[in-house]
Image 1 (tube, rainbow, N blue to C red):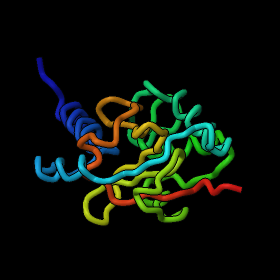
Image 2: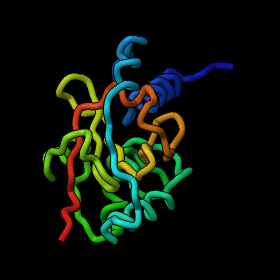
Image 3: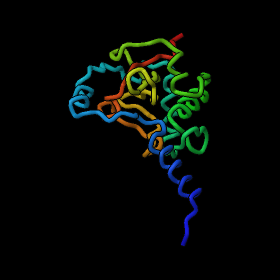
Image 4: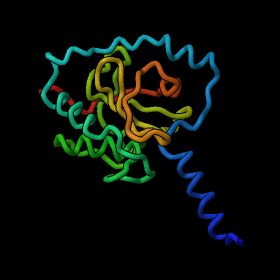
Length: 172
């Protein structure tokens, strides 16, 4: 049984894309992970005081849970920035397509001021490789390259790659 070189090459490229995808690039030491877990997030989570648009973002994000991951996807499967773009479009807010473009808009906020609907950006140094939406209760919704669209706690290893947060929903 001969396997064609093109088939092997295609499978290797597909595997690399799947592994790199929209996930953090760097592996961190346990010391860096501990530092992330001890970071003071001080995040608001009282939904009764939330702007209706923020509540819609959470509702929309929950609809995407379980959607498979695929690089560049925006419909039946999504990557992190495609997920964020879709959720915000469905509540009437237009965002750019990539995580690095999304990081260029909105207002930079302190971690202790993060609230529902804010965008959290992750990466290596200044290079942005991932975006997630804060949905309350110390959790984010994001597209994981290995698990699809999931809800994760802020004290996971993902947070060791945290760079900054942006607010794109301003209260009226």
